Amino acid sequence: MIRFYNGRVLTLENNMEITDDEVWVNGSEICYVGKDYGKKADREINLHGNLLMPSFKNAHTHSAMTFGRSFADDLPLHEWLNNKIFPLEAKLTGEDIYNLSRLAFLEYLTSGISACFDMYYFPDEMVRASTECGFRSVLCGAVNNFKESVELLEKYYNKFNGVSSLISYKLGFHAEYTTDLKIMQGISSLVQKYSAPVFMHSSETKSEVEACIDRHGKTPTELFSELGLFNYGGGAFHSVWVTDNDLEIYKKNNVYAVINASSNCKLASGIAPVSKMLKMGIKTAVGTDGPASNNALDMFREMFLICATQKIADNDAASTDANEILKAATIGSAQCMGLNNCDTIAKGKNADLIVIDLSRPNMQPINSITKNLVYSGSKENVIMTMINGEILYENGEFTKLDKNEIYEKAQAVIDRIK
Image (cartoon, rainbow, N blue to C red; front, top):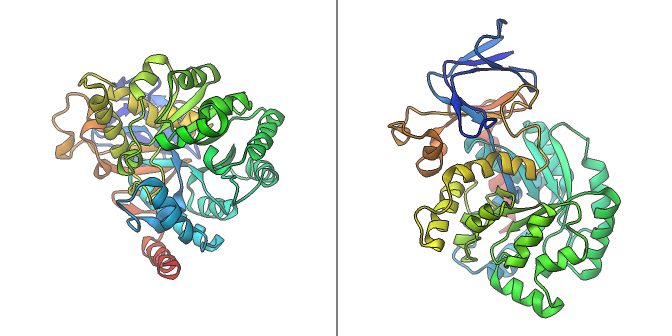
């Protein structure tokens, strides 16, 4: 067992309350939260006043797109995607996905991210990388007109759910503009068959929404709703150019708006109306998007940008409480991904935990720790990341992964495909 003591604890069980409780981990689970457990621990971790909290969950990313980091910057979305990214992507092998994903895992760990919602190809290799590294991954179907199929989506859904405690799989497709109506209808049949949520990119750019209206006479959200894709909930990645009716559909169907502020800023896609979503009670989650369009996998930057861009968009410095975005990046993202046992610190929950160094200058003085996390916190404050009860990152070192070997193999992929 591992004992965390002499620190501050943000369980997120009682909103933003911070306690001085001890937290004990037995195997993969939290076994005790309180003052005195009266047991003997195998390892005792003195927090020295630092903060123990639930890890962040990255609710939208394409991990293996580390190949495109800083390769095709300062371009509009469709030029970036069609002229730069797709040609390189076509050259990737399963082994490439394995090596490129491991590089992303290293970065996730330094940002206090214990799980990613990954939409990409070669899922067998993503599963292999995740299980070997001890990283938690929720895989999302990536069906479109060019890759994969409804039949393959169903095969993956049945194959990967239950394969490991670290792995789960969700129905999904790339986007309306890359996916024919017949394919979306086929995916809808799987939604009904398995009573399952479905996830996709949606309403990321103004031109995307306008083109969908030209094709179908309705927005992407309205089309998905009409097809029955949201009958069991799900999530829409980006959700920038959403109408009031779109948001009513989100609310009615428990659809998560997964916000990706850095990517949307970098590609000039726009600012999602997060403040309106929160006022309407729409469920929200936070993702980084992929490292080719962000280019960092940094949850602190995401949280800050969501809050800052909302204030600009609303012309209101009081818009969008930082605590709500902190909850979206932890509890919201976890529940969006189906990781309901990884969302808070409580007995019986999975031990996906991080330690935040409060002794750094950017976290002092201590007025509001939770607001500090969003407005002044950074990756430098993460001094430990634990997944499923296993410490994978501690005091700047990776305990299980050989970073130099991962860097070398990732660079070899880039050198080959370029």
